[in-house]
Amino acid sequence: MKVGYSNQFLRISHEVVDGLDRRLPVVALETTVLAHGLPYPQNLELAKEIDQICRSYGVVPATIGIIRGEIIVGMNFEEINTLISDEPLKIGTREIPYAVALKKTAATTVSATVRIARIVGIDVFATGGIGGVHPGDWDVSQDITELCKNTCVVVSSGCKSILDVRKTIEFLETFQVTVVGYRTTKFPIFYECISDYDLEYVVEHPKEIATIYTVKKELGIEGSVLVANPIPAEYAVSESEVQTYIKTALNECFEKGITGKTVTPYLLSRIAELSGGKTVRANAELIKNNVKLACEIARELAMGQT
Ligand code: PSU
Ligand code: MN
Image (cartoon, rainbow, N blue to C red; front, top):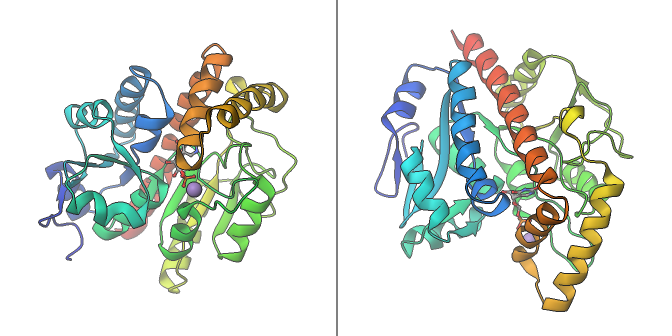
């Protein structure tokens, strides 16, 4: 398909088409974190705040999701509201064809969002945390395989400590994902900005990230640049505190027989309840912080093109 244009399965909003045509900075945003990661109405409020942040940077926001089989790039609030209220599926890249063909409503995870962003030609994507390697039986997120295949700048706050963080970092290496810490030498673990996991490659400025990405793209080295951007310290929740909530919630999963991809949404909602909303606030703040950095990178990339 021609980059930047809608087709029978995929509709790009006029604003995003215009942004891509004029080579304005555009940032892709996912919908799983809204639909499955945060409670209502905080998720809709966050969507509005993200939109405002993007606009304050002169960036076109491109929220991606699927409504009744139609892939939408550049969802408006009404569409976001429809999606989150419609008990959407949570889909990765491999489920995109299923959702479209069977006319499902679906929230896109990191993998599906990066793939759709690539299809339409968006280079920068902001999220909360990426999926990775789960502890225990084999369960490795498609996010990692997508990041190794498709070229995009992905700004995240690392991954949650409910994952096996060390194995996730090793998988990122095996699959040749370029990982850089933004002003940090530690791989962030979502709610907490410091961790026991060292990051070797550190950048200090959004322009450096834009250049790394441009080099990767120009040389044809497939795969993404994963930017590890820690939660602002004032909103961090200590890992020891988070661990107590996780322990309780995991025990409940075991007792209730909750497995597979419903585990993370269950853990997130229980951690939110057990922390009295503290983790929800942290989640929203780290996403906003990632959106800001993504906007700065997108602006640097756009400036480099002219
Ligand atoms: N981690 C979080 N919050 C999230 C997710 C992960 O801290 O909302 C979502 C993202 O959309 C991510 C997906 O791409 O979960 C990974 O799911 P799975 O492990 O099922 O691949
Ligand atoms: Mn999985």
